[in-house]
Image (cartoon, rainbow, N blue to C red; front, side, top):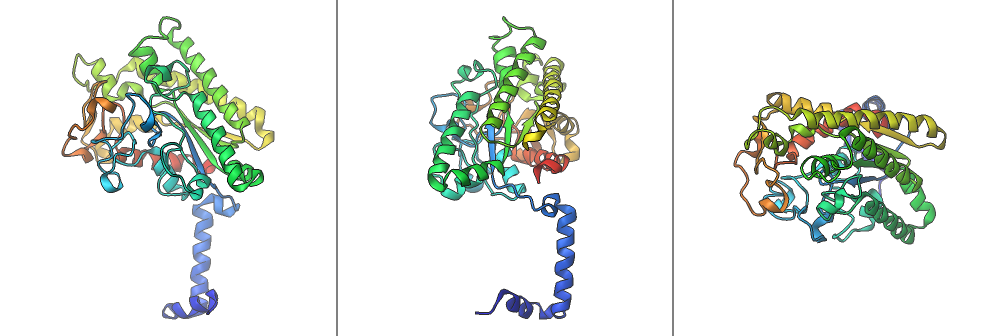
Length: 371
């Protein structure tokens, strides 16, 4: 059998011989070093893991008795095969797109309810549950898995991986992986503003302080379980979601975002980003790295300038715009015919097209942490 070098030389004669091919290869490698910082340092993200709510839940809720499900049409309309997998959108969601664009794999599967192969397990999964939050009370509103229960699933994952590949390999795989946590939306929307369970106990700044403390405890527990590189998503502009515009718009979607809910998002983001800076300063010696991912202003730019990004509708959802135009409440409903024009698929969740734009921007802004 011909060696790889010999085969390559024969195939490249049309390029002018071996010297030309070597020059092209050298240029290619130089470009890789410039364009992909991780290549220059020999770094490799081995796997990706997601914790959070419906934005990053690819189907973990399918087996739960909960209203927070999406394993039926019109969800999944543009997913490969047109299958409603439990992802809360018309197609791929955040976890899938991050995994794909970071070169790990095409889809990020749920940890539960699917037949995972060894490669799936090694390269990462999502533990997220639609309806979850940092506040333990939030998950009870929609019978979702709490943030603590998601950590228990991760513990179970580690034991399974250890049984398959041994403790040393498991530890190595976890330490080289990247972790993301994305929660808080349901805490404020479902547990404070819409159903005011916590509003009777806290004013808004006090409740945000409680959420920040809970979020930091979650993150530090995850770090203590072996996660070294953790990306922490801030909150989007909650007042710009169609369901929240409708609540403040006299029955129909308002063209303006709800300022109070946006203020709540900004307050949380400001406090959590400062806490992450503090933790990095304190824990820099153990090789851990936490980083804050600003989704707020990227999302705000999208909804304020939809035409620039190829959208025509920023205030309504393709499948409806109220608090009831989501999850089981729209099961088997027809979607709008021109859904490529919409930023939102339902009253809460973006379309795959919107996710794609956001992920591209977030990767570019955080490339130093992602490679």
